[in-house]
Image 1 (cartoon, helix red, strand yellow):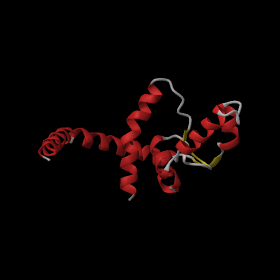
Image 2 (cartoon, helix red, strand yellow; image 1 turned 30 degrees about the horizontal axis):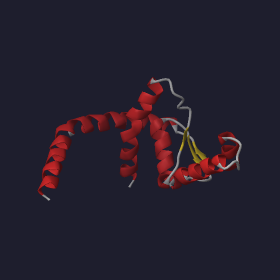
Image 3 (tube, one colour; image 1 turned 30 degrees about the vertical axis):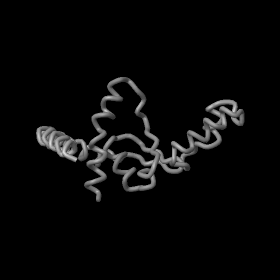
Image 4 (cartoon, one colour; image 1 turned 120 degrees about the horizontal axis):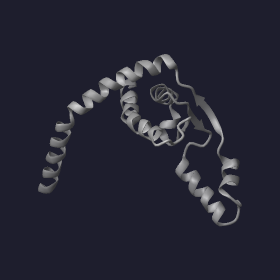
Length: 136
C-alpha cells in the first residue's frame, strides 16, 4: 500500500516542480477530498514534495466551496474572505522529513526512468484500447 501511495505522489512531482518554476507559491499545500483523511498518505506526500501539507477541518472542498459561494450570492457572507474565515481552519500540519525527502528524490529519479521506459507501451495500450472500443 505504501508503494501505491508513493507512486501516486511521484506522479505529481513534475507538476510541483513546474509550479515552482513558474514562480508560484509552494510554501505549503492544503489537502482535500478522500485522500486527505489518511495521515500516512499526507506524510508521504509531504516527504516526497518537501512541502508541508495541511489538512483542513473540513476536507470536502467542493461541497464547502459551493456552500460558501451560495452564501456569498445570497448575501449571507459579504465576501469570500468572510466565508473562508468562518469555515476554513487547519486540522493538522504534516511537515516533511528532510532525510526521507532526500531518499525520495533519489527514488523519484528511478521512477522517472521507469516511466519514460514505458512510454511506448502506454501508447500501444492506448491504441489497443481505442481499437477494442470501436468493435463494441
